Length: 117
Image (tube, rainbow, N blue to C red; front, side, top):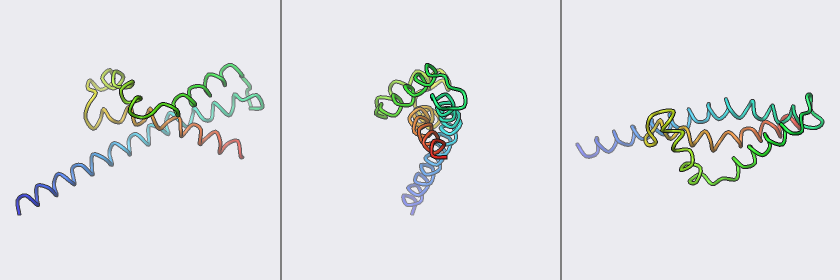
């Protein structure tokens, strides 16, 4: 019975850590992606405040962010994780690359939704 209880404890701990990582990275992806998507739509040529150069830079950021594979992005963002949190491994450190991978998708989703409105 001890092995079963230990396995269940590890399973529950892993589930809580996974929910924490995905939940926090989702919240942070929306914190960064929502304003970015709004800025992209506002600075378009037919937007509320047209700024073609700024729009080109923001659009480039979104496109590059969406095209980098996650494993490569994770390696590229490790120094940022280390700078922010003091470590590049662990549950909390995983939130940084997950957020970096998700916010360009949120930005493009917001842009497409606002364009339809």
